[in-house]
Image (cartoon, rainbow, N blue to C red; front, top):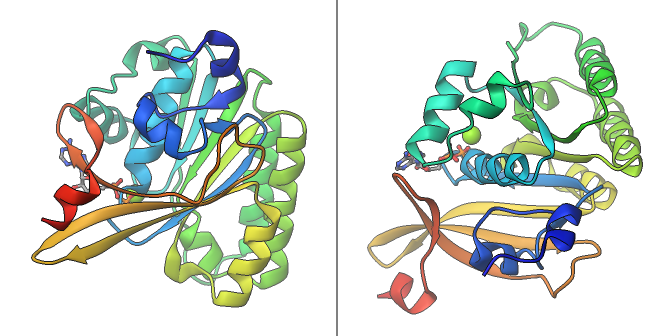
Length: 238
Ligand SMILES: Nc1ncnc2c1ncn2[C@@H]1O[C@H](COP(=O)(O)OP(=O)(O)O)[C@@H](O)[C@H]1O
Ligand SMILES: [Mg+2]
């Protein structure tokens, strides 16, 4: 059973009740979300679920991507049965492919361009996804990174939800603690070896103001035509 509309409008969900429950009922609107993980752990797929489900609940979504073109992102989402073509065509979904500049480029300028771009989005774009910040973060100084997250936080205080994806290696421990403390939600995705088998896991490290308790770890797989599918622990261990 889907949750009532009222609560749907207040949370960003995946569209899977099972996974949303693990997120404490969904990510409260107005959250700054740090989505961290290694390559192939499912970061992009998770945000594709967020996008699809949010668009369905009549909220517009802006996706910034360093990993995809418009075409490749749409066909990736199609492959998971998360078709968003109609939303894209009626300007409810915007996709901004970002080309990472050369290593010696000015990251302060890049951060400020992104900040300004976020701020200039029409207000109806309540969900903003940035996949991924790794390249920008890698060449930035600590101050620049903290300032960027702080400015995202300001957008969230105005009711927007911002999901920032980073590869785990992008931050050292100290930086991770500082960024994490600025964020309302922190999700960590990994690939774990369970016996012979590799399983993807998502740790819901923190979700501020969640309806239900968080701190869960789930194991999941990504299946064609379905997307994220929870693997029951007993099965994952088998
Ligand atoms: N249509 C699909 N069918 C099967 N597996 C898929 C499909 N789309 C993505 N995947 C798999 O999902 C996993 C997670 O991918 P992704 O979310 O892109 O990882 P990340 O963004 O963390 O690097 C990858 O192993 C990828 O191969
Ligand atoms: Mg990705």
